[in-house]
Image (cartoon, rainbow, N blue to C red; front, side, top):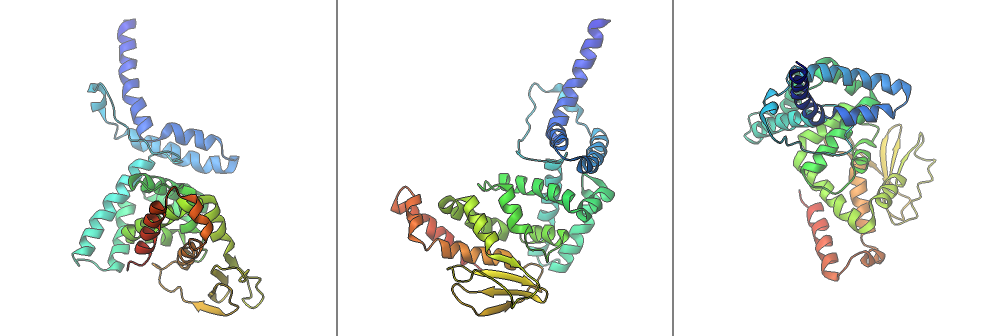
Length: 306
């Protein structure tokens, strides 16, 4: 009887552990424990709901396998993150195919995106609404999406860097940021390959520090210490909208941001990356002139694509 009981528990532990690992319950639990009390309460609700929901779909075929393959994506924060990414990519591919065949417009793409996400999300309609309405929950959700995005496309940047680039512009909502990533998937990959190459020459931390320094929020555009005497572009956000200082120039250029698919902060970052790469000191960061020429060619070629 004892041996039978042991085999029973062994069988179901073998079933349960791969499931918990695949759905990121162990790592997300450790992440939750490191947060403050208020945030723990928010995240525990997602953890408990996700566990209950996922156990309904547990794969019993695992019990018949000698080895279980689990794809690893690091620095995930929420349970079911990789499964959610699979759902999002599936939605994106279906809608992108329809869009390329001229079956739907950009507006239709965006509308169907939210309908399908509400229907297919691992977290359920109620929780996904809560995630997008709460900035902290969205940060964790979007971080996980970006981690999987970077891993899938083999882009050597941290999720923090990419999150800052996409989410610094305060005029964009959480839904707009998410929507922009999915509707411009190929372009976003191209943009962050450019940043990846730039970071390999300049350094990711240094690059991000520069980008943040050249972005200023202020009430009155006429009372700005824009640090515009340096050789970089400075983007100003004031009550009436955006303005940009050209390098070493006091003249302001008003910028329109009426298009949700256009992010002026990202544009300013790309312009400053190109300016920084013109400095001779970055030649010392490469092993050979050929390597430098190759990287510069890739950056300038990609940045000039339509």
